[in-house]
Length: 72
Image (cartoon, rainbow, N blue to C red; front, side, top):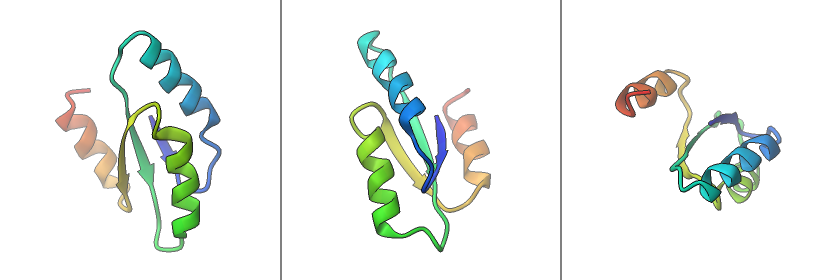
């Protein structure tokens, strides 16, 4: 799952919950920016943490690198 800091991650949380019920490991990539506050990132983490392994990055290029590493 990929989300930008400050967006509503409700759909990602629903997907994560469904995966948890089926014992499927999920990873969430949160894209932050220099203007993303700690409070904004904390809200995203609170929505996603129970459902996925979390990776926070400030570079869009990291998505491609992470998906390659996960063989996705």
